[in-house]
View 1 (spheres, helix red, strand yellow):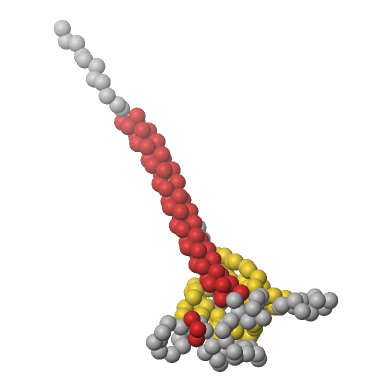
View 2 (cartoon, one colour; view 1 turned 90 degrees about the horizontal axis):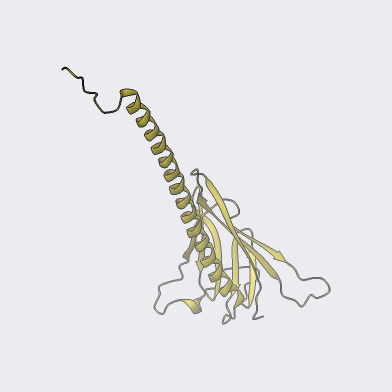
Amino acid sequence: MNHLEKQQGFTLIELLITTTIGLIIMAGMTSVFVSQTRTANMLKNKTEVMGDLFLASQIMQSQLRDAKDICWNSASSTLVYQAVDSNVSILPCSTASPDNGSFKYQINTATDWKIMWKRPLSLMKPGSKGIQPDELLRGLPTVRGLVVARIPPPPATPSLPVIYKVDLQSNFTGQANQAQTLGLTFKVWARNK
């Protein structure tokens, strides 16, 4: 009585099909993971840049709103303001006085620009040596990082203050590792004239 027992198990073809299906599922899961990671990094970069732009705009707005006078010098890319406790006029749009402040758009590297904030003397810490500007924001595009436009009052009401529209733009890394631009705009005028 010679009975052949049938062996239980998988054939080679069944193992190859199962392995192929498993590899396809793993490739799909890896693709989703990589895509989600890129999206998360892009959103993180965008959020950080927006936070920096918002903080810079809040500092600029608080300084400019408390000013006696504001002036945009397009030749030097400098937004000059006369501090509320300053007696030195900013006209003709000069940053020569330590009593007045300014926000200057200047080059950091060939592809990276920054905004420097020169605080008025009244905001300097006691005992500080000289008036050195502080870096307010970096990573700005070479074009349109800080753009200021003067909006004159209507001719019928010349007593209204001059309003300035300030555009801040910065770069962030997008999903496909390409540079994208993010901007923030606000309007401001001297309220203590």
